Length: 133
Image 1 (cartoon, rainbow, N blue to C red):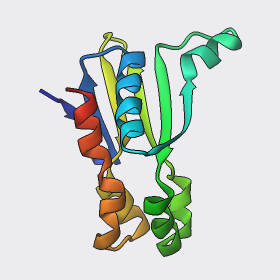
Image 2 (tube, rainbow, N blue to C red):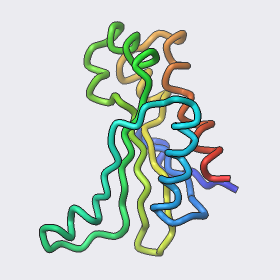
Image 3 (cartoon, one colour):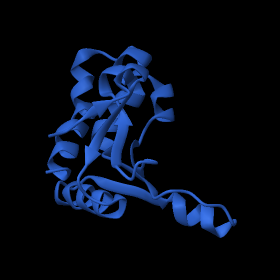
């Protein structure tokens, strides 16, 4: 069962039964199978260690499809601040792993996107659900 929290601030977080690395690996495999471009994968824990700081496991995945994202940016150029889409896998202080992303409905409201363009970013939810099975 997936648990959602922090929906009110535009962030959806779902509990993952996997480690941070495995959670991102699973999502990346699904994205690649659907020919969705992975632009970057950032291991923020590793980056923190490089400067002598400690951070719980945290990885950020940036991904998208220019065919889906470009119409959004044509409609509202400033949505490029939130594109490509980002997903954050992180381990909480109680050792639970969460997968967090910006709620597509929040992005629609924030950027006044027409309903017909929402589908271009709403695809994120079922992909995440699939990765967490």
